[in-house]
Amino acid sequence: MKYSDELFSYNKGFVEREDYTNYQSEKYPNKKIAILTCMDTRLVQLLPASIGVKNGDVIVIKNAGGLVSHPFGSIMRSIMVAIYQLGVEELMIIGHDDCGMYKLDAAGFIDTMQQRGISEETISMISYCGVDLKKWLSGFNNTEESVAETMNSIRNHPLIPRDMSISGFIINPMTGQLRKVEDDVCSK
Image (cartoon, rainbow, N blue to C red; front, side, top):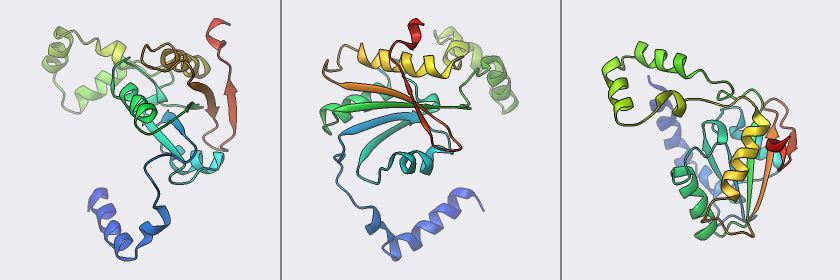
């Protein structure tokens, strides 16, 4: 049995038991906060529990590393929807220790792709089309700097309102402890 089949089967009982009633809320966040964070499995329940939020309190936007990698990509679009359509007034960027994007080896990543059946021709074609796979698949070397750079890229985006509150943190994925990232960490 595939894991998705197992999850789909569980869902049937969840709906039949009406367990969903414990999670019903409005689509507008109660706390008017959006959180950009990593997709790491350790944060799924730990992050909300560690900051005391429940379903309906915040908008959570996740991707690998909690990064904004393109000024007009899907992460920025999600942030724009959160601000202009869902009433978000504050953004929290929450990176974490021991992130898979930390010092991600793009060459090794590409090797793994090839081991999984992606041909050299496909990789060359993508490069020929102007995508620098090594740059696109690279991670970061300093978690604090990564969070600060993401904060700055959002803050300096031409479509972000100047009164938007943007703060950065790093969470310990084992304990849930947050530490604040100062705005000027990139200039130190």
